[in-house]
Image (cartoon, chains in turn green, purple):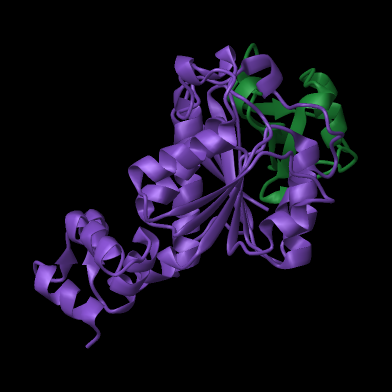
Length: 76
Length: 272
């Protein structure tokens, strides 16, 4: 199935801004995180289309999956 | 018409009362500059300093702003710009909370900082700055770290709270306090070229959605630092939200966060 993956802010570095990617049926959000080597401890919002998603959720054909890094705030 | 109102009428040009007349009224009527400003706005006169606000805000809305209290948690990168803009906008009472003193690494971005103020209290510096730029505004400086224990008493009088904190633990405490007290919270966070802003009303839970799954360790800002321009950009979005919450104008960032990317020059409206 084809899934559009959108990366934001620091997650773009060394990867891409947006990519159409082929994944096997039943691929989960967590599988894509591993595929792209996104750092788990720096993950902020994850959306499938316009809905917030957990790592265990499976993807469907045509989904758009968006990853935002965690922005904690000011530096001291 | 009271003697004070007669004074405003004699001094006004159109409906604008100049600053020198406001100062004179405070002296003549033994009032503070803030008391004069409140009376002036209540009677429908506009302090001359706000004349460029008037295409956006009515005198009645300017009065509402002046009667409002906004608590700003953090007087660093975001908070410095937030406080500056709130005071110039004409918010009458600002509670500025920060336990820290200025350090050299603040100088690249924190508008309240300067070499001569290294080692000085951020909250007290905010008070001096506001007294300089808009002496009618009252700034209550609190040199304490906001937490779940002291928080309710510190922000109980606030109509809006602005999140300008530098750590996730304080933000989570702020979220709980604002939800318990039923106070709108304007959230902002920055890291390097990036930032985001969102507004949480009582009953909403965007902070929990954003940070509930995380431990209290720093986000990507710990690797990226923060430059001079990102705090100003995010703070301006936050103050626009405060202005709209108090004045009732416009659309708010409720149930969404605005992701700001100053490197790609993109914004993304993320539903929550």
